[in-house]
Image (cartoon, rainbow, N blue to C red; front, side):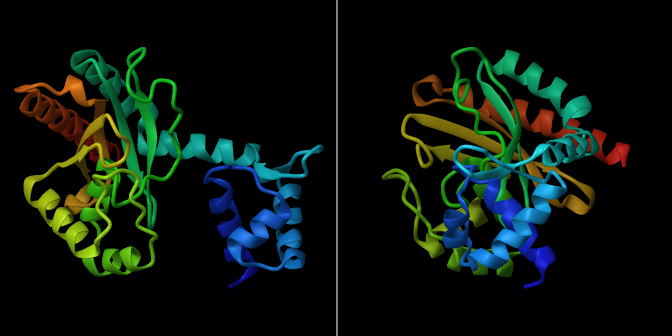
Length: 250
């Protein structure tokens, strides 16, 4: 692996919990020698991609990454296209709504709009990868990717059972993916967190490609009879609006 690829992998690791690592922790996590890793970190520090805390000596992402993230956010339309749609849906549905993005081999929430006291209001889950066998958004995004790639990814992934409702069998997960694509939505019924129910729909890009989705999350008890079809249609309308505007923009 080249130094460039190693540096990129360091940034990806630092973008995952716990978000700050000592040299030894990074070395253990990445399976890299401390000497070579220290050289890479020194270069990243020099260019402000990484910051090292003075007291703990731990490394975390630096200000350049924040600036680049803001540029990407504007490029894909989160600020001027998605935010108004999220705000409207949050008011209409009365629950937390959010957009998730597929990043190579994982899914992560990119932006959200929460009602006060709602699901994820106090939990800043933005930027944290979601398991592809548990979260509604991650399952949906994985379902729309190349099947051979996803099968390989599943075989390399530690499919943890976060709750008693989490699928951990690869054949069962693939069957779930098939259902998701066929019906055009994904449901998370306490498979990621007990007491939480989520619904996700795809945001289609050019040639019907799917690398982002729109979701609503709510307490299980809030999802009463007759709510599902209303929420599904509202989400699909919002996803269509975002997808259309993004395609026109580009």
